[in-house]
Structures are given as C-alpha cells and as structure tokens.
Length: 179
Image 1: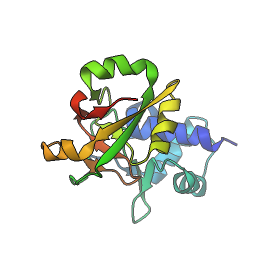
Image 2: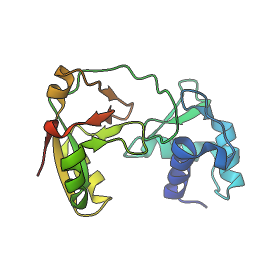
Image 3: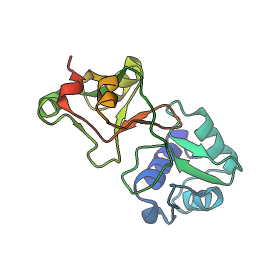
C-alpha cells in the first residue's frame, strides 16, 4: 500500500508541475477529474482509492489540494509552476506577513527582494510558525517580516489561497525586515 506521503507528492507533481507527464490534463482553473487522477495514480504504481485521496486532501496539514463542491474534481490550491487561473480575487492583506527561507538565500534577497522564481507567486504566511516550517525545508531558516500593508498601499496586489497562503507577484527589498 502506498503511503500518504507518496500520494501527496504525486498529487503535487501532477496538479502543480507536470500534469502531462503523468497523463492528465488540467482545465484553465487547474482542475482535473478525480476519477482520471485516480486511474493515473494506479498507472504510476500507487495503490490508492477515492476514499484515500479524499482523506489525504482533508487531513493534510498544509491543505495544498481542494476537491470541487460536487466532489468530481481535484486541484492544487497554489504553488503551480504551470499556467493556471485560480480565480482568486485581490484582498487587503494583514499588516505584516512572513516568509521563511534558508539563511543562505538572504544575500540574494537583500539585493533582489523576494521573487516568485518558477512559481506563479511569492508565498507568504500570516504567522511566524508556518514561515519557520517552510524555511526549515531549505536549510537553516530565516524568517522575513513583510510590510504587507505598506505594499498594498503602494498598489501591490495580494491574494489568499483556499489554504490560507498569501500570494503576491514579488516583494521589493524596501518592504522586507530581515532577521
């Protein structure tokens, strides 16, 4: 039996980065048929049924995925490196947001700010604990505080994904407070 971690990693790869490589297609909003995805899981050697996918989606602490209201489709909530339109409306952010990164990345960030790199957006969190968890995935972590209200006042757009991750196109250096 495949582990929940293996299934979650497959979902991330398929729904955020390379749907064609696993044999699925996403619509413009990033959705694919749940039954089609289930068949592709099996074809790629992962033993899983629909109830298990739903459990992985529902119990994931990061809430990376969503199942449509009618239960027939699935998509990633954010983090895409492929072109999708999530249909998120711009929102006023909290006054401060946070970004976790590796301390080794700080010199480049001090010069260029935060860039989306290969993703659609820069990912920000509303709490330091989440930012710390993200930063630890990349090495010794550093937590950046972002003057989100200042950015918003200067016309930068913010979006909040279904799982509470704040998204923006970039964060200029002047809005970053470094550790």
